[in-house]
Length: 266
Ligand SMILES: Nc1ncnc2c1ncn2[C@@H]1O[C@H](COP(=O)(O)OP(=O)(O)O)[C@@H](O)[C@H]1O
Ligand SMILES: [Mg+2]
Image (cartoon, rainbow, N blue to C red):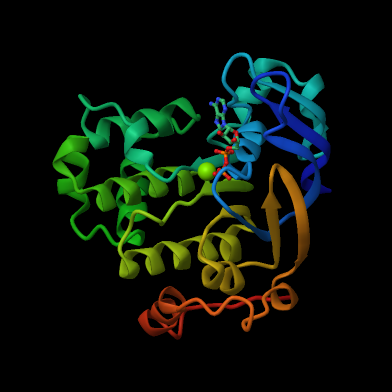
């Protein structure tokens, strides 16, 4: 069964122009698909459509199935129930979605409780475990803090920790590391790979870093003007002579932790 299956799927914000134009793709369990493409090509819109988070007035056409179920026939309640538990999303600036006047720990705890984790002790342990995994070395301090007391990079790591907490079957990540410094980016990339290795999480990653895409993904899609103009194996679609970008992040990933990295291009 496909985790995500999109067929001839289009999204328009204004009823005229298509921000996403007749896109078809599937994502299998445990697969990592990266999507690259210039700004405005429809990458974020596509992810929002998958998550069911389009603004009022936007219209989607075509078919979109999650876990084999057509979302058009799903109730709003069933669709919402998928969010956070079976499907998670990480945004470029996750801090923007946090409540500015509630402590991180209270928000994190609420998220886990709402998604059915009833044991307070387990919630507390999981929070600490995930924050440590995202290299927030003093989880107690982080949990006591208000969002504004943390740096942008720390807030982003908290957001990523939360999104990964329930071991989602599908993780949608929209440029999740572009606001982080290179070392932290590498840690986040590693954490995403671990999530896939440990829980079979499928990941759709929007990134502008072709090095990261090549390193992390099974397949890479290229969007242009709302269309998916290319979709291919990561190993084949990256022609390094055509993309002579500095591969600093890739190098950093490899440098930080050679041993525990599991590279899977299969
Ligand atoms: N909320 C919105 N309302 C209207 N148009 C939007 C909205 N968000 C994005 N767009 C438009 O849709 C197109 C695709 O944008 P987007 O999905 O954000 O591209 P990308 O993520 O690839 O940069 C762009 O033309 C953009 O201006
Ligand atoms: Mg975008």
